[in-house]
Image 1 (cartoon, rainbow, N blue to C red):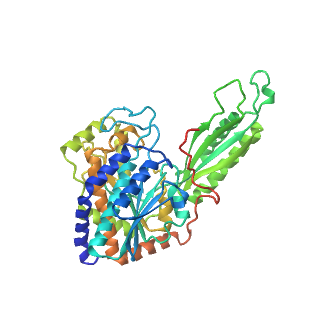
Image 2: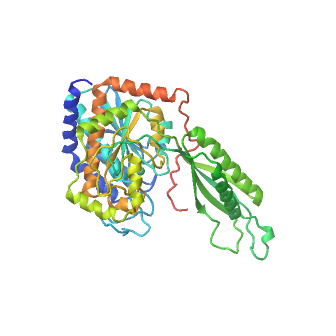
Image 3: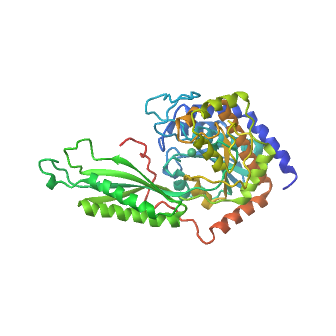
Length: 479
Ligand SMILES: [Zn+2]
């Protein structure tokens, strides 16, 4: 590592601190306007406005997605990308700071995955790097990618497909978490497919023999898939949701019904045969019920590709920075939320971080070791697709009581706490420090690229989105 790196890494932390308040305010504003996948019009506009104010060159409508926004600063040199998100989840409306379920709006949306912090924190890191490039007159470009629809919309995959990442050298992002440190690069590839069955309506009592039930077909399909489960690879997962059960009248044979499937596996080679199996089961259900079936791919994402050189660089930056510093008040608030959790929730968070359970601890006061023996379940993220084409590293940032499960009211409730703000700023420092260290030591970028080439040598990136599939911009609208 060149000798000027540590000094400049310390310097960038001051630049992060200098702007922390306005980015905390941005996070709180996004928390207060929870918008669902591809419907993040106000949230994306907030991010675009901050990019403009900060002097980034702003482009909106990336990959034909109205809520995808990119801001760039700097000239020449390597391109460092920070990935941000700002979409919320349905049904997770919750008052801030209240440790019992209390929606702000009945059935309203809520930031139950902390993407208000994710977007603002990544933008804070990008802004600090921009300020650093300018004050030190360094060659290098920094880009903030405001990526919509992480929750099921796979926007980053469409952005990759459109070439938006083609000239990026490294990508950095993070996710709120119970613990701080480098995030493990384990996630499942997935695809979401809608199966719509069409039959024939009829009077269910007077002339049932004239009807053909699309709802029957959905039920048989689900039974078939549930028998398939026994024979799936261990890491695979299948879930479904009824989008249209054919109406509310039991005395009408249901002429139309739609079920959405979400199929996940460790990578595309494991996923694709399962998807074909599910498609065959749908055909079988149509045959059995004399209905027809049409399928629509809604989204698809790849698994994450690890990048060890960037993980080491980020870990060294975290170690230099030290663990996040929470105070008695933060720990007191966290204790109230921990009281709403089960011991299993808390044990799961420790297992995922590869740490032994410490039942008396409410907030993170450590850094997860790089080689911690992590276990536990994995979800999916559209960061996966970026990681196949650009060396990518992710941080975890402690922003909530240890054990808080994601996609819950407890997580929404903790999206504006002082601890959440501290965790966001702390992680922005780790990300910005990693970017500066990479800019000052081009050998790291070469190593990161070589690592990605090695890992993908025998299986080059294949976009999981079938040709012709476009972003499901209306996916969050109620059917
Ligand atoms: Zn998330």
